[in-house]
Amino acid sequence: MSVGSQGVVFLLAIAMLATCALNSEARVTIENGLKTMVYLSPKITQHQGSVSNKYYYDIEFPKGHIAIKSFNAEVVDEAGNPVALHETYLHHWVVVRYYERIGIEDRKYKGNPGFLGSDQIIAGNAGICKHGLSQFFGLGSETRKTSTRVPDPYGIEVGNPLEVPSGYEEKWMLNIHAIDTRGTVDPMGCTECRCNLYNVTNDKYGRPIDPNYVGGLYCCYDEAQCQVKNGLESVKRNLYLKYTVKWVDWSDSIVPVKIFIFDVTDTWEKTGIHDCLIEYDVEQSTTGIATNDYTSSRRTSVRFPISGDVIYGVAHQHSGGIGSALYRKDGGVICSSKPIYGKGNDVGDEAGYIVGMSTCYPEPGSVKIAKGETLTLESNYSSEDSHIGVMGLFYILVAESTSESNYLVQVYEEELKVPIFSWGLAVFGLAICAAVLVAYHRRKQSEDGYQSIAT
Ligand SMILES: *[C@@H]1O[C@H](CO)[C@@H](O)[C@H](O)[C@H]1NC(C)=O
Ligand SMILES: *[C@@H]1O[C@H](CO)[C@@H](O)[C@H](O)[C@H]1NC(C)=O
Image (cartoon, rainbow, N blue to C red; front, side, top):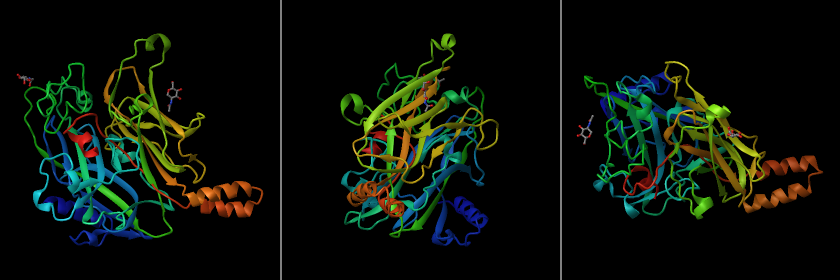
């Protein structure tokens, strides 16, 4: 980390009344057992129209057996000032946990976006996509105003030494995809990765791109260049993703939650395989004028693998998104999540951009999913204009019902007429498993970004 970024972290730490020392551990703030740490990613150097889509391995992250309570992030400049989306569009960031064989540090994957065979094993979320979307956390432009808080008594368990394979250690990878749209001819087009604006006909590896592919991650790979206005003098600047992790030390009173990510492009319904394509396009409506309906609605169904209680939910959409929901088999809503659009120029309120997503925090025990239940994900976009390379993801955190608690639920149902007893059982019945968060991935880019980190 550069002297500059250390300084930024240092100032932030002071601002948070942290103990002021340059040692990481000393910068942790603790409030009622909740620990907070602010980190900076490696430096991201950009100029007008440039794309950065890099993979940073072994990032700074809290150590030990802990329960993560939230993970927030934002892009800042070298002075630590937040950077607006209309300057640097945060297309996405994702955080992936992996296990690395101890002692391979010497031959680190410089520039390699994938993981190194058996030396690095992805320790991803609980499902549901077969490839891609293995992250624990991840969001995009909506990062600043989207809650990632995991309510008590739940937590995302990490760092459990019993889960790390022998000879390995737990590490974290951060992928950041940022597009500098200052001085560009069509900023929104750059954020949608429209191939014509990037003057791209081949992908990162020189393979020809299908002419029908109008835009998406193939066209805005690392170091790609979006079209800028004539005569612009190139100005470089350095940015960081500042990420804030909150956690508590692990204890038996914490109920672990599992992270599940759904993708509306999941092909399971048709193919029986969870092939998640990550991106899709929304065509401009030809009937909207007549019907005054500009909703493009996409749906997919998947079978859920475990039973448990939903304790958090959030969707991820791109500009043009107008809402998304996860439904149970009978049509009941598990969680509905809507985008919050910015209205002005301020950081966190940038007009035209999704600056936040609404989240769901169901009363614990009130939203249950049964093992094998078929759930439907719906992602709505406005089709007033066409949109390229959009996403329809949905994250939920689920506290799994163990067989013991299934038993208790049965007893509970039999004992319904005995309120005091049933209350006790209801609370007890919550005792279980694990959790979620946000973000991304990508289609069949065999060696490229998303897909490779996911396999
Ligand atoms: C676009 O790419 C072509 C072929 O690589 C090149 O000849 C042309 O100058 C580029 N145009 C712009 C505007 O950069
Ligand atoms: C999506 O659009 C359909 C059709 O207009 C509507 O019935 C549904 O309620 C919408 N869903 C969400 C989550 O907004």
